[in-house]
Amino acid sequence: MKKNILIGTGVILLIFIIWVVYGLFIATPVSPPATASYSDGGLEISIDYSQPSKKDRLIFGEESAGALQPYGQYWRLGANAPTEITFNQDVTFGGQPVEAGTYRMYALPGADAFEVILNSETGVFFGAAEPDYERDVVKVQAPVQKIDSVVETFTIDIRSSDNGATIAFSWDDILFTVPVAGQ
Image 1 (cartoon, one colour):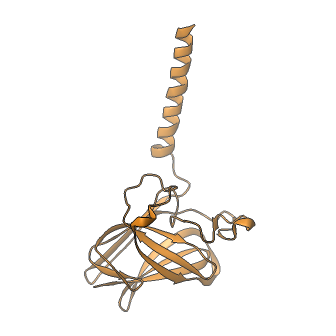
Image 2 (cartoon, helix red, strand yellow):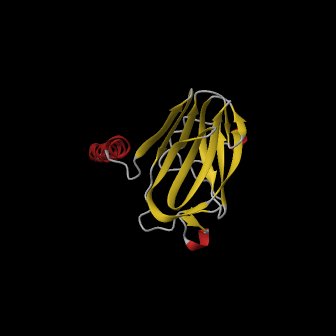
Image 3 (cartoon, helix red, strand yellow):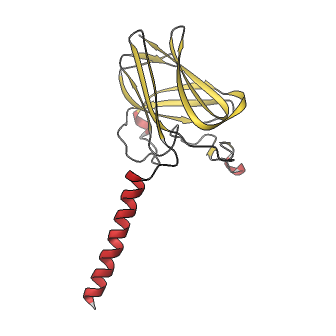
């Protein structure tokens, strides 16, 4: 009897391990990983994130309306794992100084602006956990711009601008941007 229980427990454990390994390392993620990168005039920026899709859902709005990402609540600027941004040199991010290095980047959405935050806590495996807010390095306000067409898949794009680069975040019918310049 004990032998049957041990065999049954072993089979269940083996199936669970296979399921976890398949889900984490083999299966195509629903929100695939992406990288946005920029290199110009000695300034290099790289952003690693995952791209969730709209799928006929209300993305940003009030929690009571069933929004996927309610106003005022932590959003990892993507899905799956925390979004990370790397600067090869000291920069100004939204007009505020930031040292060269890698940072966790997240946002607090709002109807009129998103607060975009850089945090020194990096290398976190799962992105669902909120960061240690005491490790926030900089917070900037990025005004929301309504766009005419719907962006199905969350996208981060880095574009050249007069003083360096502009990081553009677009999803659903909104766009918000943060300027970045080398120092």
